[in-house]
Image (cartoon, rainbow over all chains, first blue to last red; front, side, top):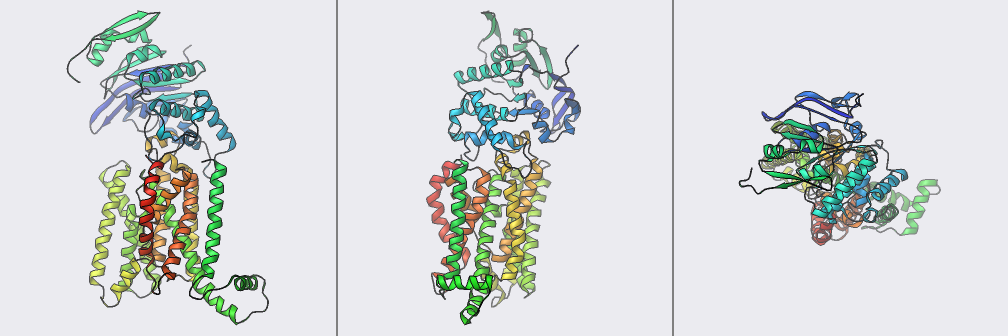
Length: 263
Length: 339
């Protein structure tokens, strides 16, 4: 029997200023999966995750979260099921790491309630799990890109949800931090957390995914196991470049060839 | 900054405010010594044999100094808290309470009130009404240009609304009687607490205190609003409701400050800066501490205004003259509190 998905996207259509961004998208996310969403710039990945988070509304189609469509949830209720981890960014005010992580608790508090000792304990525990407890009193703005991304992941953990949606999590990180972050995602997935992450890197999708979904021009063109989906023809179709796929130590790697012209 | 340290800072600021309030009650053109003051307080609280001095103190303290001190506290707190709230909402540390045109609107309303009536309550009512009308115009323009509730469009709406009401204010000044009404308008626009009377201050204190308390209640959401709408929503915040609530509360507090004291600049801009520098940017402490330090700042500025020279200098001029050098001094360090 097929397990019921946590999130199910059905026949989703979305246009922006008469420009079609998504056209008949179907996607499901099951408990414990790490799904990588691949596609070129402007293919609709970010729009799709924004719709899944209830940050925008679709023109047509439904997004089911558990037993209700996303339109029937408030932002507070969505935040009780899904945590969003944006690309690391600068914030206008220089909050400490602890203050940033504690923001993951605010959605759970009553209108007049202040964060309790328990809330602070949960935030400490999240920092501990990510291994950045020592950063807790550091100003967020003074951290490296990798550290900022870890803090945003710790903030997601303080929401006490088990589904994470990440928008290009390794974007802007140096190579070492990219690999460290992917390792952390892989580790958390073994603890039962579910991830949907957009990425520009087929290699990363091959490294850390139980499933890969490929988008092109607002449609999903492939959805399946990483080794089945990431093929030389897919890379050519989506990115317009040639690449070889080689196996090493039972792992597949993508080796691209140089190409001319920027798309 | 840890919570213990922050609460200590807040307690210390409240202690300074209380001390400054007592000193301001004693200090003036007719100085009152502490023993006489305590005797008077004892007499007012527990009764006993009165004397001529106490009758004089009734006049000096209850009729003149106390309303003015209470008003300085309320206006300083309102402007500083409104400034901090707007800075969080518009994700910009350089925003002041006038961002949505409330000060320009209230100034126009008051000037129009002076033009059409000599009744002070009409002037105050007009200032209050047009403060809200100006913000309403800003919000309307912001939502007309685009369907999205973008803060940039709202700021643009505020710029347009502010300019509109500044132009309307100029028309009122142009047609006002240059020998009576115009000087009254100009003097009032410079800001002053001289019109304070105890019953008026007590009436206005209720909505002012409620709006400050409302903004303190919203303060935990301000941290999230400053991350941007999408992130705040994804963290479970009803951004539209919180922003609307904060706009209404900040407009109420700042338009009432114009109603009672005219145009007083700089408080809403520099106080949140100084607080951020001292305790960090977290709004849960920034907002209440801004209230207390804003009150201290305006109480000090008013003391300078009434005690330094033989002629009282309008408060708005004093806050600018004190505020600008403070701003220059703190700017270098305050920069560290925002990116």
